[in-house]
Image 1: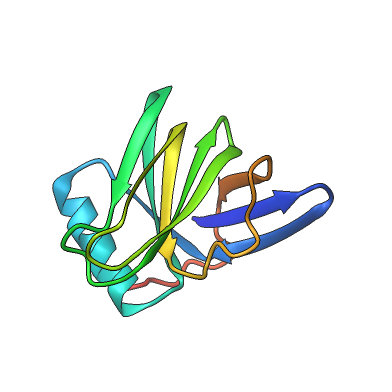
Image 2: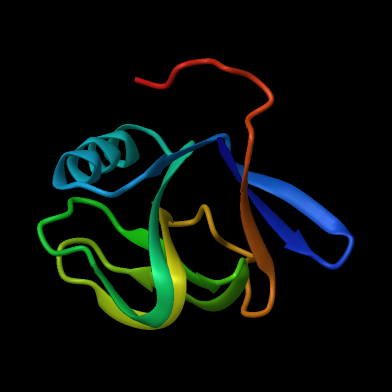
Length: 122
């Protein structure tokens, strides 16, 4: 699965691999991947729209965090290494290595789509 950014008629792949985070183990695995490479993202999905927090507490890298509601970007923030904290509203939160979400703005669309290749990222 990959994360696609759309603005108007323009579309680009932000990362070719996304890990859905629904357990602490998935969170740890995803953070390890983010530390090692910038070609992946973490996706936190929720059943309803609400205020969601993100932080880099004990995280050795800066993150770009994107909140979406039904696929539409509601907020984008860059969190500093170790101490970053932000919140936004949405039903999904994406975390990328800092710089990956450059150019993503409120009102744009983010979607998770089937990857074009099935290569494994370890």
